[in-house]
Length: 513
Image 1 (tube, helix red, strand yellow):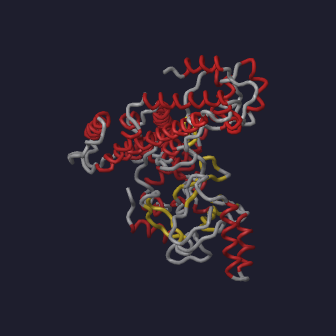
Image 2 (cartoon, one colour; image 1 turned 135 degrees about the horizontal axis):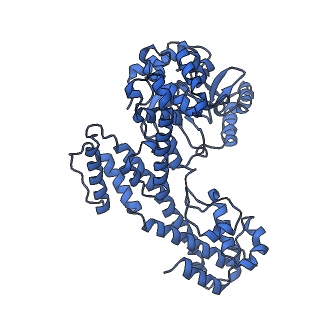
Image 3 (cartoon, helix red, strand yellow; image 1 turned 30 degrees about the vertical axis):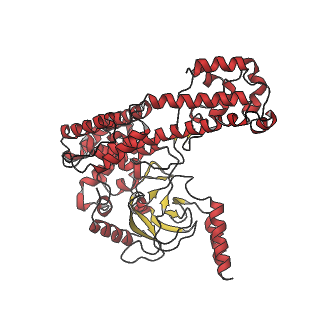
């Protein structure tokens, strides 16, 4: 739910009055020199745009420590809150739980809260995994994702019950004691807090939390971006050398943001150079799409840090020393270095593994036969996973379009291109919404759309992996009648590869036709 323009203007005016600024001087608004609030429909909605051309490493925004909402700052401003929280210090509530209670307590103050202009601009709802109902959880389809959603809900319920006594002692309003209110507070902390060195729960940072997210790896490299910027400055005129010196100094600073003790403020820097009007993004960690959904309630269509784990045989794990979390398929469909190494070693006869282990861990391919075997194994494993899911990649693509067209439950939809399974899912969604009494708000529509979007990105990685493996696997066919030396130049042959008989036996067991 978007907040009104009036609430935003009050926030920016209040922020300017208390020292938040994107420049050394403040006017009626804390923004305008470097940043401006804009709306980016296809990239996170409301966010911060460049009010002028910005250079990488340049200071964009400074938020004084006194403005940061932390457990410490909240307790200092309210003696009743401080006494109650200190009474419960021995109850082993986590820093995040305590901050959630403090946030709800502050919300209960209404207009008398010092942070009221900021609180009124917080989202009214979130779509993190803990908020998913049974229908949305099942819409994820993949067991690991469903379990992650169930675990998130159980964790939230447990933490809410643990904190209930403290909230009752503070005499919070009845609506702030509910599980729904707790989900809102914990989601606010999960999705909006920034790291600070003195509190594990982090801090809520007015205005600073308007930056939208950019995954690490999406932006050009620091060196490339700096090289282009310095080239432009030097070639403008000789006076640009001073700017170059400043840029080199700026580049040594933290990119993105961090608390700086020498200025007693949270400072944000440009992670790359921006042109006026472009959205300025903040990278606050490396997350898969499922992790983004769990902690922040959104997905990225192209997330370079997304990955898929495929089930492996127990002996595969025991044949190598790689940790399980390194055995995955990248977002672009390519198997990870560790996964390929593990499978290469597993596909080698056990009595030869010791002699080729150093080659495997160096990333070298052992032989044509070995490489073809593991690629076929991966391809067939991905194919099996896809076949066992209720809907296909194509089904989900069409279903997403259908979801976006649902304006109300009574409006008919054109479903000719959608499979019967997807039609059943749409009917189940309508029944679920009616049962929960959400006919007007369609509260679960966005969570359903996110669930379908997540499983679509999951399937796309598997589809891309199949294409990647099959493309490489088909290369030998093109070498028929060609000198084997040419073939070996593509896939080096080493001692220790799977013998022809062993390869055929393995294929019959692992990849039955």
